[in-house]
Length: 247
Image (tube, rainbow, N blue to C red; front, side, top):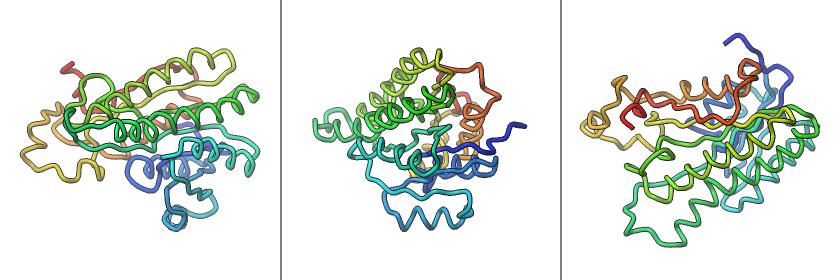
């Protein structure tokens, strides 16, 4: 990619490890000022130290309360006077059978995966709309486009909702020069897949024959944040080694 993010201010939620950290590192490498977020400030500051403190803004918040996600955006704008990019990456889930779900755990998943993204997007959109520019990228999942499979129904539903939110916001925001897209990773080498056995990995039947890397997902996010994707909005881009070809 030849585009630069120099001068841009980008918030990446859930960015102390995995895909989020790779995304924050890639944005900083392209010249952006990056707000790095995690639950614990000490951990966030350690990550910023490793990335280079000059390009990082450390922020801590528990997104189990979605209003904290909006507050993150407000902090970035207060400090930098602008926000050019938002990556709603924070989230999580665990494999659980439908019969094992209860309403409290269902709601907890929606709060972190969907409601926090909504709250942050709403806050960022208000600023971006006035500026008539900006890019919001939501981290969805292969699970958003079919049954949960390896993950629970709560996780799949939250990610499907995130794809729908992406398209709804993209349609409204387009006339103001604000774009919104989603990225749907498949099986990526992160903490969530670290416990897969060799046999389980084989049974995934990934056409490219391996799990993806966080950097490979981050590269797609960089495209969506950059001017090179200036005519792309309302899309959910699959990064899954071809798994989505199975339907």
